Image: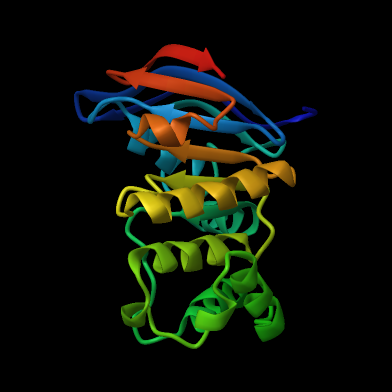
Length: 221
């Protein structure tokens, strides 16, 4: 599978007296699909925020694409997240007065020059070419999630990081989203999915189960 894209080295995150993560180590290879699972309060969200450059560990090192990002400034983390990570959230975080196409172009704007043709191709890739001019309120939940995926992919991220990507979707749309993930993985994308849904985790090559801020077990599919 080649080189490692991500390495967590004994990271801990302490809030006051609460240890959200304790000495967690994990290596993710380029092109690997990982699921992170665990009960509420196990540290999944904290781990995702650290991997996604939205938070820093209290101790330990985070190596992303060969670079130690654990000591970066907030501005540095923002730039790394913009350049290297495609984020997909359970809450879609679409701008409600912009069309699907414009929502994708916003991500381009922060990275480089917006390119309408490229943004349209990203929407076509997730089956939404015909819905490009629709506002989020005119799209179903599944369609809104696919806009989020197109937005996450537009800058060719090194790592796709998805937080409960099917949490707000019905079974049909969950299947559509998972099919897109399978296609992306088949094309060589590195995917980390945080989920509570065993069906979503089934496609992953490895599942990391957290309990009380520690890695409780690792299963391989």
